[in-house]
Amino acid sequence: MTLMLVSTVLCFITALVLAYVRSGYPSPYRRLLRVWAEALVLQGLGWLAFVLRGTVPDVVSVIFANLLLLAGMQRINHALHLYFERPIPWRRDASLMVAAVLFLIVVQWGWHNVTVRIVGMTLALAWPMVHGLVLIRRHARRPSPPSFRVVAAFLAATVGVLLVRAANQVVGTPVESIVAVHPTQIALHLLATLAPVATALGFALMVATRLQDELAEAANTDPLTGLANRRRVEALARPWIEDPQAPLCALMIDVDHFKRVNDRFGHDAGDEALVWLGSHLRVQARATDLVGRLGGEEFVMLLPGTTAPEAAVLAERLRATVAAMPMSFAAHGDWPLTISVGVAPRTPGDTDVRDLLRRADDAMYAAKRGGRNRVVLAD
Image 1 (cartoon, rainbow, N blue to C red):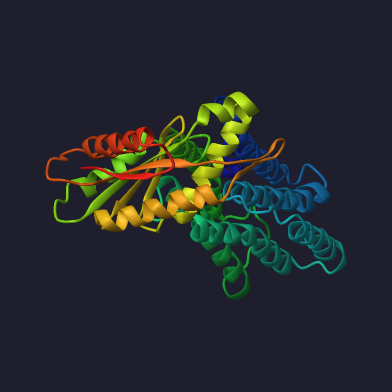
Image 2 (cartoon, rainbow, N blue to C red; image 1 turned 180 degrees about the vertical axis):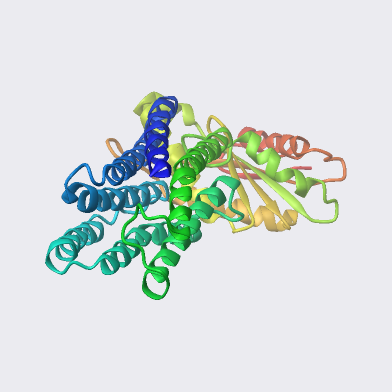
C-alpha cells in the first residue's frame, strides 16, 4: 500500500514538472509533453483509487482504478505515436477500453473470478506498452540515443513484470488483489514507483534530442529551398577535398538577370523561381552529388568522382534544361529563365573547399561577362 501511495505522489509530481518545463519548448513540442503529463495524471489517479480500496466502493477501487491505469498506458502510447508522427489509434484504443469496461463488469459482479480479472487486465495493461516498444524499435534512429534506450528499457521491464504477474496467477500462487503482498506485486509496485520519473525524464530528453537535431538541421539548411547552405556544403565537402586521388569538380550556378524577376514580379515571384531552380538541380543531381545554395541567386553543385569533361557535360545539360523550361509564375505567366555556370575541377593548389569554390565562382562570372546562359570551364 505504501508503494502505491508513493507511486501516486510521484506520478502527480512528475506530471507537474512536465507541465512546467513544457513552457520552455517550442509549440509543436509542448503537446508531446502535455500528453505524457496527462498519462501520468491518469496513472496517479488509478493508483490512488487502489490505495483507497476498502474505503470506497468497488466500482471506484476496482473498475475505475483499472480503467484509469489502462487510459494512462494508452496515453503514453499516444505520446510515442505523436513523437514518431504516426496517427493515434483512437478506434483501436476505444475498442480496448470498451472491452475492458464490459470485462470488468462481468468478472466483478456477473461471474466473479479474481484470477480471470487480474490476468485479463494485466494483459490489457501490457498491450499499449508492447505497442510502444514496437514504435520505438521501428522508428527510432540507429544507433538509438540514450534517452530512447531509457524509455524502452522501462517499458520492457513493465511488460515483463506484467506478464510474469499474469503467468503467476495461472500457474503459480494466485493473489486476491493488487494490494496483496507477493514478489510479483512488489516488483510491479517498485516499477510503478520508478517508471513514471524515469520514462518521463527519458521522453523529455527524447523531445530535447529531436529539437536539437532540428536546430542543427536548420543551422545547416537554406530555409527557402531546403538545400544545404554554405556552411553545410563546406563541411560535407571537406573529406572530398582532403583526398587528393579522387576527382572532384564544382559547378557554380547563378540565375541570369534575377533582379529583373524581382523588379517585374516582386520578391515572392523571385523566391518562387529560386525554389523551382533548387528543386530542378536536386532532381538533375546524381545520388553522390551535393547541391547547395550559397545565398541570393547563387547555387553550387559538388561532383565527387567526376572529371572536368564529365562535369562540363552535366553543366551544359543543366543550362539547356533550364533554358528550355520557362519559369511559370502562378500570378504572372511564363518568364524565360537562364543560368550561367562555372565549372572548376579540383587542382593540387586547392587545399580548401573555398579555393575550389572561388575558382568555380570566377568561371561563372566569366560566363556572365561572355553573354550569360552559358558554361565556362575554369583554367
